[in-house]
Image 1 (spheres, rainbow, N blue to C red):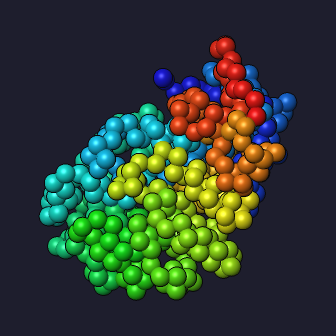
Image 2 (cartoon, rainbow, N blue to C red; image 1 turned 90 degrees about the vertical axis):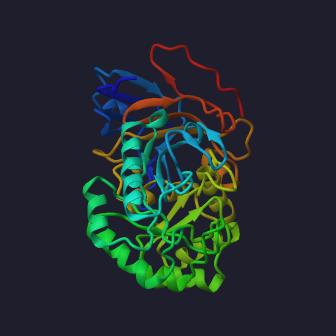
Image 3 (cartoon, rainbow, N blue to C red; image 1 turned 180 degrees about the horizontal axis):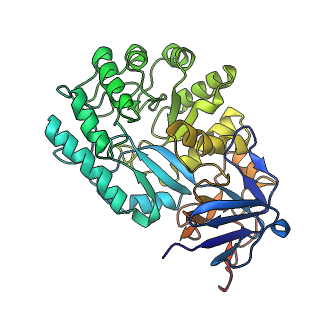
Length: 399
């Protein structure tokens, strides 16, 4: 589908901004032009003429497209880790429109020498830049640092377009001083970093404790709730208190440690640091609904209003990761998920339903102003789903 010049989404019942400081917007219409948000407000006050695509949200909820801060892609929409095809498309059906690589570590025969490592990082950045599976935004090309890398290697990768480091600790560099030096080189050339936190995930990885995490000083504390095994409680609390970096909570981690992180961040009045990932594909499998599940988990068991928990998966991640999506704001990318309370799910509203631990139903995803998926094949069916002008509507069923 070619990019439309103008998209109008109207009849929005609840508009979630992705911003913790102002999570619910007083608006029922959003306009995108050239793939970016052009206007937000009441339909009667906006110029909706000349739209290429008009979506009637049917009175349901529109939020920024969800962001998965921690995935391990390989090539295209395939991973050998679980012999899984089309996992990115399935993730799109879970309301996620952007995914961020924490390292292409599951590539068979992954090169660990500097020349091969750089070549694969640049190639991975390129192939996801050239091919967006199902329209998904895939930020990839995230090299895992190994002994032998020097400053010029980071400059070479950055000059070639590599903007991320994979999880520090998944390669041979597991000590604080070496990691700190390489992370500083990466930062100098504009590359963002994350670190493995907790016990080993697979043979060959190792324990990364609080001392290494603090010394490495990466931009994101990757899966602070473990991937899979979490650090002891006192170390998690220490990490939350001792630095101001992003606190990433993942689906494939320890749920109790996730709630401890949430509660500690809340006590510190620093919940804006909380971001969400799945850490899949991995030994736990692929989780197309992993981000929605984390939103429901943290909202229901962590006593967080649903509209705030959704910010953990949208605006918080956009700000920590310096992305142009994730927030409903003029000028940002027109990446949206339209969803409704699942059919027959308890709760008077979609927010109340999520706060009781239930997943919403996804009715549509939009990326850069282009419709990428309709009724989700993975979420429970939404009560109502959006329709497109000129098409026959689909009945959503009752609650």
